[in-house]
Image (cartoon, rainbow, N blue to C red; front, top):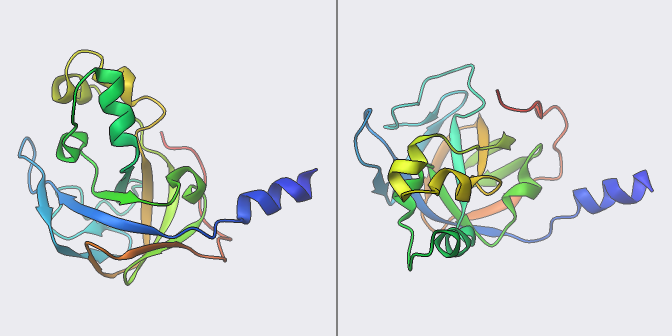
Length: 172
């Protein structure tokens, strides 16, 4: 049974797509949408206020585009602007849950999935009453930067075969 589960977890032939790149230049400023960005190993996205926190498992945050509809439905609204979610990368076509604990490539960059990106209390203000609870369980993925480089909207998101050595400890 264990061998079968390991095989199932390792099988991820789907490729995703980077739909949007978002950075927050400073505290309490709106997220900016960029067509491309530079990502630095061990730090994050250049221009994002959280870039440079070397010990953080949250160097880059990702959100599943397909979950925008789920979130809108839970909040009884027509549309959710991804900028409100305070995540850096919006991806589609590949399960972020399946990327947790493994390495994956977006453009020139290699990231290591470091665990769920849990919602913070700011979701209540950004999304309205119930925003925090609506985001629970679908808040996205936190990742560390393993190899830096450029990313561009439209880049493929590809799970890498070798995911040994990725720190899969839960976020605090």
